[in-house]
Every structure is written in C-alpha cells, then in structure tokens.
Image (cartoon, rainbow, N blue to C red; front, side, top):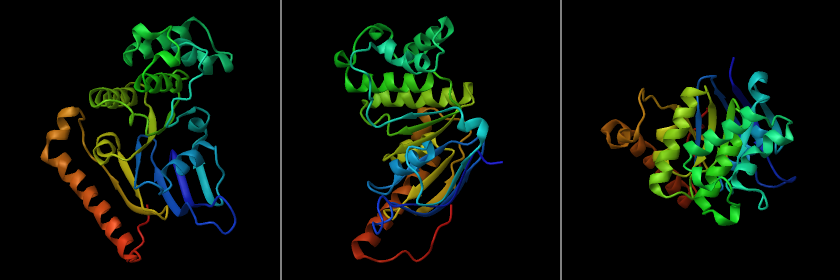
Length: 259
C-alpha cells in the first residue's frame, strides 16, 4: 500500500481560472521521501497544502495512509513564530495545544534545539533571532510532535550555505533514526537530488514533467562532488532548459509524462 496516492488531481482557485494543478497522479511508497521541483508558479506549494488538507482539490483525489495521516506536520516558507513566546515556548506550543506538555516533551524540545544549534537561544524571543534561526525554531516545532510525515515548503532557503548543508544532513539523519518521511519543496536542483528518494518535476501547468527515483545508497556532503551526483543534476538542468525554451516559443509539450 502506498503512503501517498494522488490520482488525477486538479486545483483551480475559482471557476474559469487557470488550473494551478492539472491531472496529476503519482504514488509514494512508505519508505520513500519526495522532493517537489519546478519553476516559480508551477503549483509546488499548492500541492503541499493539498496534501496537508489546507486546500481542497477541485478534482481528483489524495489518499494518505491512515496511520501516517494522523501524524503529519507542516513547515511553511516563513517561520510563523508567536512573537511573545520564547524559542523554547514556540517549540513546545503544539504539545501544549495537544495537552501533551510534560517532562519528556520538554526534554525532546531541548534535544531538537540542541541539534539545530540553538542551545544558547532557548529563552530568546523571535525578534532577537536571525531569519535563519527563526526557521530552525519552526523546524524544531514541526518535529517535536514526532510526526511520521513532514511537509516542508523551502525551509532552508533563508539559511547561509554551511547551515543549509547542516540542516540537510540533519533531515537525512532524522529520516533514518525516526523512520521519518518528508515531502520537500525546493527551487534548488542539487538540494532535490541530495534529499529526495524520488523527484517530481512540475511544469508551469502544474503537470508532471518528470518522475524518477534517485538511487544513492550513502548520502553526505561529499556526494555532491561525485560525477554520479552531478550527472543527475545535469539531467534536471537540461529538463529545466527544455521547459523554458518550450515556454518561450509557446510550443506545447510533445508528450505527457505520467508520474
């Protein structure tokens, strides 16, 4: 059984409006993570919101395995922290709302903030943190409930390169240690290739342009220096170039790619 099963999904925000997502179908296995890649305006964030149930489909269906659907969390593009709560209090907020704030939860929050390099910022307010630090707090807040699936909307875009690489590796570690699945939106081809077991490439019509598995057994930052990794990056760079050329020439796609 699939962890996520999307069938002929369509989304329009008003009657007669252009489809943001159109006739999109794909499946994600229980042990797979997925990266959503594509140009601005192709529907990546909308698809993520549909998966979370924050938007409703115009057509088609989304099925998420029940044991996973009950344990999902979402990381927005902006941190969306409560300004009058400290870093630690923001992380503990979901557990407080669920009535699960206890010593064990407090320990888990401290551990996550330690892994994210925020030990010395526990009692700082969001206004005292940099944008990158705020996003790390938001990531800790999403993980503190111990979700089975995390939906992440470009969470590392505001981070400096070294921190971004560290967060990528932390996400891979959490995937292995906690059997965590994630759906990750990014504009970075290299990031998608590094983090995704599968990549779904969307074009500006919100349709699947490419769907393939990314098969690297071991992943660390040195992988990005290998010919095999860069060969995959080049494949996607060419796909982006082909899409841009077709759009510039107003040439319809010759084939439909079914995910």
